[in-house]
Image (cartoon, rainbow, N blue to C red; front, side, top):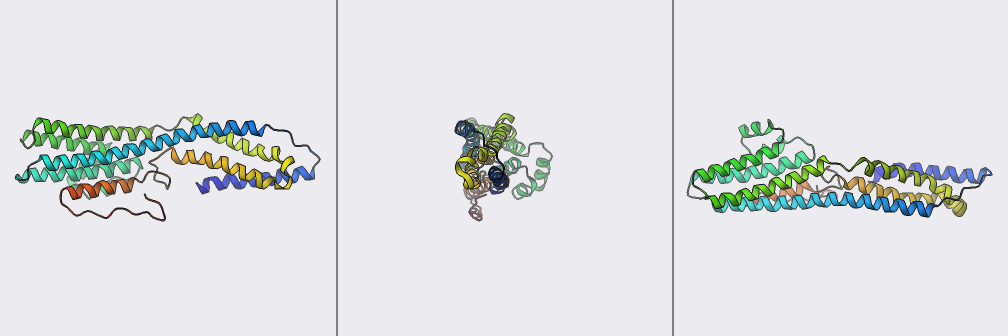
Length: 285
């Protein structure tokens, strides 16, 4: 937020100085401006916008919480339902769990608009990686592959119809969570929510020193800049929260949540798991 705020704030400070100097050097009378009325209306407008942006951010967090729980449920059900006595069943059990890990990593990278292959190739065979990368929606394809493998387990008699239905419900929960994330990612706030707040905030900041110079005098640059800082910061908060998957310091820690899923699922099949991610300079990615 600092870079996006300090640039317009620096311009505002220079403008405040110009207005103040002009007021004392030239014989002009600063017009009386209803700054209180303007400021109140703008604060309500920005507050409503920030609340809308935070709702998107929080919904993204809820959806990823659902993804964590559903991934654990899928792994637990597969491990418990499929028999250990059959070598092929054990292979399928491991494949479903590893594919789910690859799925959440693929989904994370899709949400951040990053290259998917570097993460999924750690958990999938080479031929399956090639097939996955040929699809438009890699994560959805991996989820479908798990659905087909569960159907295969049912046909081979490893699970019954009730167990298959239970697993399908978990896959539906996962698909619904992914759909919600894609809706947030692909549906930005309307232009009115992005353009008008920025326009009105900058207009208000430009009028501030004109309305305050007669009262504050030489302190106008300080007072006007501080007041402008508050409005510019509120404006930037909305911009920071509107896309919770943008891979910035203000967004959801998708890497850490995917690592949590990876640890839990690997441990569920008795394989070594990595350490949880730790904050980098106070930021958990």
